Image (cartoon, rainbow, N blue to C red; front, side):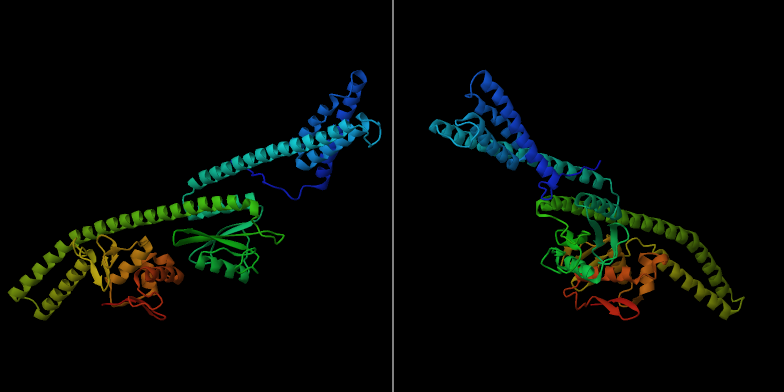
Length: 447
């Protein structure tokens, strides 16, 4: 259930509501004056001054310090006008009455301040409780998200509702890739994309109301875990004002932290699912290939035995028998390479200078320290390592890692290569391990 968070302050209270608060304060003073006149007619005016504390307290508690102070001033003037000699004037002849009026105003003003302070504290406590409930509700919704797309969708809906603005979340790999937005038909301008790129590059806020790229209409904030940039969130208002007011920055930061945790969790779970699927696919492929090897190789052996027997007997055309024997040997070699019957074929790490790639255990180390790679990154590196020194085309790598349906999406491969260079190369801008063959593909350099 979504919870609307009341603002801690509202500088735009309607004028009619403000005037009604002051009018109510004066009305309470008038009622107290009428009651005082009745009491004076029956007894005397000595207890009348205490009656005026009630409207002051009521006005301060329910309307704030301003109406409470007006009630205090009106109470002092009414007491002076109706209950001090000379009556029905604002003149005071008796020094004791002067002290009474002054003390009445001071006590009423102090009571008004205290009551207004209690009101502010109650509002602040209510605001904090509502904020905590909002954060807890947001966290519960994020826990139900299964992937990054769902996390982004929940995030934009919650931020758009709470901050009454447009929201979009952009991918860290490409600032033009909108993961989710509200409303859905959002087209960022070039200046907005420049602000998003700056935030994704530096990890600093930018855009409207910020020091960086302030000409943009949107305000962008990084979503990152440690040094890893996960995404960026952009907010914009229709009136062109900064989307996050000062009194809501703490709420925004708390919600952003929750969103960051959800993004990190979703990415880790996604990588784990990809790794599990890749391992399951490898096990299935290994089982199928082993089955093929077990099924075909005995037949090849049988044919080779017959061919060699014919050669020894010399009863057939020797050239034909030799050619048949050669072809069967070649087929056997190709089957061995395909099936990879030996389970320890890739158990030894492939050394490439400072880098060692263990295809069997799926571990990559640099100078002995293990380097974390995502399943897709490892799959690209493993394919290059299996054909080290050879140029593999873009289409080959895309088919091997992403499947035939994605062989035209070269951007997927470029993002993975860029991430591999960042993690493996000593100088990513001057790669020496993963080399680019312009217009063709990539090659893993042999050291």
